[in-house]
Amino acid sequence: MPKISEKLAAKIDAVKEILADITFEYESATLASSYGAEDMVLMDLICKFAPEIEIFTLDTGRLPKETYDVMQQAKAHYNREVKVFFPDAASVEAYVTEKGPNAFYDSVELRKQCCNIRKVVPLKRALADKKAWLTGMRRSQAVTRAELPISEWDSTFGLQKFSPLSDWSNSDVKTYIKVFDVPYNKLYDEGVVSIGCAPCTRAITAGEDIRAGRWWWENLESKECGLHVKETKI
Image (cartoon, rainbow, N blue to C red):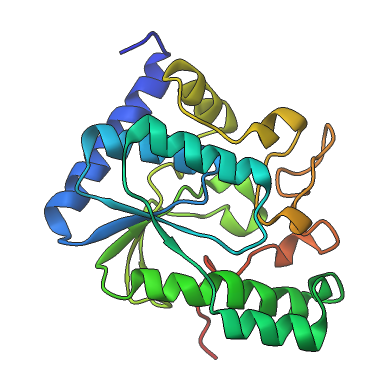
């Protein structure tokens, strides 16, 4: 292993153990990859140590060019199949016709409708026959993720959910990508630290919250797209 800190080496070993446990306990598990930095770390570890775990991505139809670039680079680098799920064309057509192509800027409700069509519904299809899914979510990414566990039951989608990098820092992720020469989205070099659809992503400035560049016109507390929101019971 290339030279890294003992602390990061221990975190890598912990993730490898989690991946091994997942492959042993769940007959069908999959990584939901947005090709963000964390997801690329997990893709690298899965390809090396847990190839039985499937990988998929959601193509919303409005991703940045740089995201498609890293998709292509990862395909060449890992020679690994990543299944792509698109939103329902009729639903997208209806939303854009009725609300307009950029209606998501007008309200949180309209933004969440767009996210639901382009991300949440396709995710349900992607997870339909799976027993477990993995994400690259980390606690330090947002106030909505501060208590993120490594493993939890996802009642929304009805399967076990794993976030193996939950306790990783930004520095951990950056170091892993650099040391192991992992393909990454070049938008990170331009000050973007949280990458989603092109019209909903911007660079941040020094001192801004890590999620400030996502849906920057909204309050921090509302900055989830629906993929990782727990059901609440009244």
